[in-house]
Image 1 (cartoon, rainbow, N blue to C red):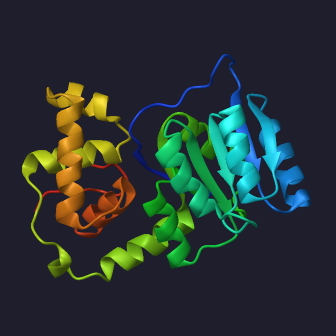
Image 2 (image 1 turned 135 degrees about the vertical axis):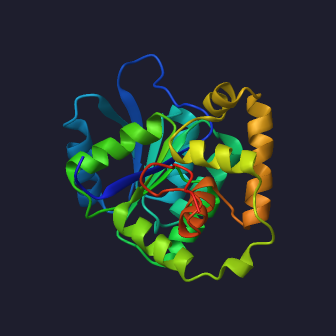
Length: 240
């Protein structure tokens, strides 16, 4: 699909809609007109339902607890609590809920803070309706998405980072695991493909994060791509 979003990797676990074929979404943005527009765009898909709307961060947290949506679509800057703070709270208290940040901000500090907080996706408000709908679907399925302009900025940052910042190179098996996560495999699927348990896969990912000084799968994959270890487009391991 043409547009702004680029699939990067798959977050652990699969998020599925509860008791309905529709994806249940909570929408949080402090501008009522913006919320109305986003709601209209998402519900045009026919299989996305906005179950609650919040105008500030504290209301968003309360509604997430009350309604337990499949996906929370959050702005970054909101009164009482930011989208980043809400994301951290969700990851700690309700980790099965997907978080999609929808914002006008593409500044590096915001992007890195969102990724480190554990959001499943980061989309700019300039994205097309089709790409926004696809992002909600991908997050609900357990995948992570990045706006393509964000991906380019991250890649530029990674390419400008000296290789010497890596403490040590990852092993061949760890590279296999990272390559498969870049293709969108869950931990369980990686384990099946490699003949190991999903717990072992999680252990490999923990070692990868430590060695590559990464705080998330997205960051680890981007760094591996920048080093030429795997292909950005396919997740294939590259040959020297």
